[in-house]
Amino acid sequence: MGGVMFILMLCLTAGAMSGVRGEDPYLFFTWNVTYGTISPLGVPQQGILINGQFPGPNINSTTNNNIVINIHNNLHEPFLLTWSGIQHRKNSWQDGVLGTMCPIQPGTNYTYHFQVKDQIGSYIYYPTTAMHRAAGAFGGLRVNSRLLIPVPYADPEEDYTVLIGDWYTKGHSTLRKFLDSGRSIGRPDGVLINGKSAKGDGKDKPLFTMRAGKTYKYRICNVGLKNSLNFRIQGHAMKLVEMEGSHTVQNTYQSLDVHVGQCFSVLVTADQKPKDYYVVASTRFTKSVLSGKSIIRYIGGKGPASPEIPEAPIGWAWSLNQFRTFRWNLTASAARPNPQGSYHYGAINITRTIKLVNSASKVDGKIRYAVNGISHIDPPTPLKLAEYYGVANKVFKYDTIPDDPPARGAPKVTSAPIVLNMTFRNFIEIIFENHEKSIQSWHLDGYSFFAVAIEPGRWTPKRRMNYNLLDAVSRHTVQVFPNSWAAILLTIDNAGMWNIRSEIAERRYLGQQLYASVLSPARSLRDEYNIPDNALLCGIIKNLPKPPPYVI
Ligand SMILES: *[C@@H]1O[C@H](CO)[C@@H](O)[C@H](O)[C@H]1NC(C)=O
Ligand SMILES: *[C@@H]1O[C@H](CO)[C@@H](O)[C@H](O)[C@H]1NC(C)=O
Ligand SMILES: *[C@@H]1O[C@H](CO)[C@@H](O)[C@H](O)[C@H]1NC(C)=O
Ligand SMILES: *[C@@H]1O[C@H](CO)[C@@H](O)[C@H](O)[C@H]1NC(C)=O
Ligand SMILES: *[C@@H]1O[C@H](CO)[C@@H](O)[C@H](O)[C@H]1NC(C)=O
Ligand SMILES: *[C@@H]1O[C@H](CO)[C@@H](O)[C@H](O)[C@H]1NC(C)=O
Image 1 (cartoon, protein in one colour):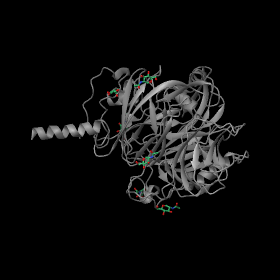
Image 2 (cartoon, rainbow, N blue to C red):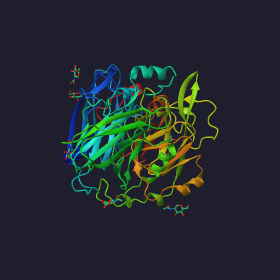
Image 3 (cartoon, rainbow, N blue to C red):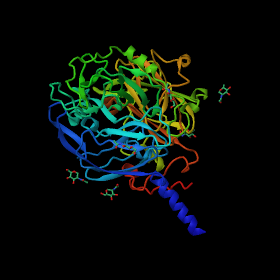
Image 4 (cartoon, rainbow, N blue to C red):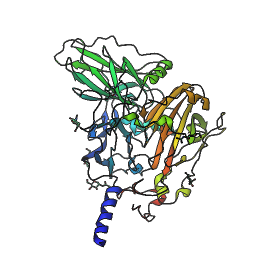
């Protein structure tokens, strides 16, 4: 009897502590993170490679797969990767941000274990440490539907990952020095597509190939540092099928605005004259437009791509209108075999409204970016570890910022860790209000949310009348146009410590981010996994005894 109990307990803790469920397939990876010289814009610079690759390898997984990645950090600085949009149910331990994990020290390795539970779709991973994202180490992460689950379109001939992003030739160390000395990183030098930019001299190799008459899937993600990009393919329309993990209503677009951190999947049919075509990504809302190109070649086709590049839209009203056309396909299955719309989010009462206003200001002559008047700093002890070890009061204060900041903004920006105390299972509303002249892109870890509205002006409770309470897309990143607001709705049902961040890299680096602490009152393994056995320890908890694990 005692023996059986003991074995049962072992199984429970082994499975739960690592955040991995035994019954689902495992994918194992070993990644070696190193410096290497890259010249994506013709200028040699220091890049960050994974197994020698820039961008990093694509992860191809299927719903519920367990992913085990042993990461060897051969940089001379601490390093972490986040899996943006992967929800890590009960498992913020693996989220790869400095609020939940100690970074991987140079010359050491750490093995991430996580499950892509109940998700499908197109995601990215990228470094969250020290502006490393400006040097590479980002890549695509796709989660395919299980074979039994119907997908609302036919299998494409091929499935391509298209990572688009603005690019700086100065290198991440220089960019970081700019930020540390209180300057902006300024404007990028170009736009890359999968780490390259075609020259257009007729000698470019194609990045993608298509066979006439066939339909292809392109997963387009903006991995850049600050610019929204317009994406288009010469002569070809794109049918939108998925956005950050949700099947969408399949509208057709000539071009798509992809804001930093966002991902779209489109279907493209090779229905044009068989020759080469340009794929273009160009900066939006900038005085001078920068573009990156690459080539799609029809197999057996003849002829170069036309030098006439399709025009990008102008102005942000176009972009707002495009946002309004995005709808969830309520009758399609999600990761489980039931319609996505069976969950009627529009009928749930909101229990808390949090308004987050971004601002930029100078503190002692240096730029800091803030949320509701406070600029976040990452303490040496990760917030989640401080909370778990019972020493949160030594590291941060809960509810650091008000839910409803004064309209005029804080007179003086201060720096502190920002942590919101969230009530488990509450259904909440977050309003992102942008009073600035530049575009924002807000991301939430651990969840997907309903992006119910984006509108110009200031938010008031009356604006709720304009929410899409029926078929807003459930996603993880939402843009906020200049002098506008965006509203999202979500259920706080994933226990953990979750990062809410501006995807604009310099803003996040200089404090425009915060954390939501979600504790289950039950303190039970049903709601949250224990700290993994191999968790890295740092800061004031390093030598503290490990708290007793949750057992049921
Ligand atoms: C990683 O790459 C570096 C440089 O190529 C090499 O020295 C090191 O042995 C590699 N480490 C692993 C674990 O493969
Ligand atoms: C990705 O995984 C799926 C499912 O296992 C498989 O059918 C497909 O061929 C894989 N794609 C690539 C590019 O490896
Ligand atoms: C580091 O890598 C080795 C294998 O190279 C592995 O046995 C070990 O578990 C890894 N350590 C961590 C903390 O993941
Ligand atoms: C939504 O998904 C259903 C079920 O797969 C599919 O039949 C339908 O065509 C899709 N609707 C739209 C508008 O994309
Ligand atoms: C929502 O709140 C209203 C007004 O307070 C109440 O009448 C209604 O029963 C609530 N609905 C749910 C689903 O709790
Ligand atoms: C956080 O909120 C919960 C209610 O949801 C409350 O019980 C708890 O005391 C709060 N914790 C702190 C540290 O404020």
